[in-house]
Image (tube, rainbow, N blue to C red):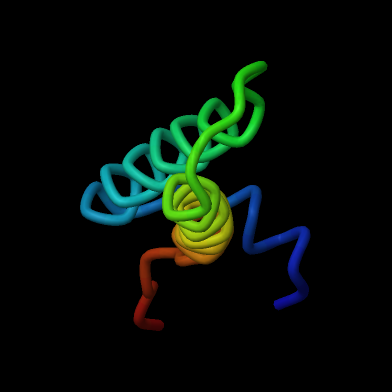
Length: 70
């Protein structure tokens, strides 16, 4: 099974929830990083971590498929 076939198959419910949480984390991180004001370095680091972790979580969760026993 190649990656395109994996992305077309249904995702289990737990990983759909995890994917949506990852998307929310990436969105919050991106919003923090794009603020038009000067913010402390701690918030910049937090935004970067949220963006990366959310992106990875959503990408990995989308690639998980249900196992079909034959």
